[in-house]
Length: 260
Image (tube, rainbow, N blue to C red):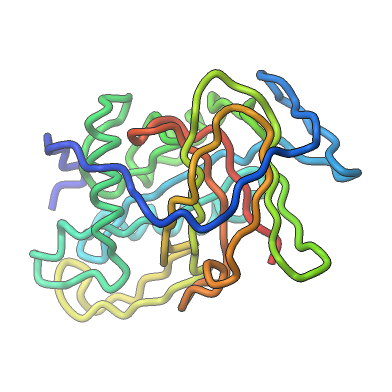
């Protein structure tokens, strides 16, 4: 397989899901547009948003293990939120990816259709904050995208209330809307590959997507909501993150790894 195999494919639909929460107007004042530093909310200092790194990879791709290794190293940086999204289109090469989700494939196609720098449907690919992309093993290119990433979006606070329910608050203002997604992640996966280009190898993955739910929309004003407990009890997941992304596979404007 070539290391980079760009393809022109039809646009994939953005991920959808069930609305799993009740929205209410927050009584807290929100920070304005252009936030770049920590803000105080309910006595808690909120750091700037992490930069979201999405790795599109496949167990059937011989060029992917170096990118998988890089993703594991990048995930140790608290200023980054690394999400691994195994895709399905290399399953035809003799090994069905045990972690792949069709939703990951559709999201990569939707990103490709945007035509941003580094766009295309290939593995390994990293997309930074839902915008520019790069070959997933080229650390210099990826760090360059991270340095240029916009971290000035709304801020997210999450805490467990006295009843044990997870409450999430989004503070900030904007003239755009963003989809609110809850992503369930497995912090570590190890897979022994039986056939295909990586046959006989044992591969390791970080923060693999296990489930993803559309919780609704943030409409540019402060808001607060509760996450249904069953959404935080996904089989195989031990991490959960909130992502705010503009519609149609647009830019990711905010992210938060929940403290469980």
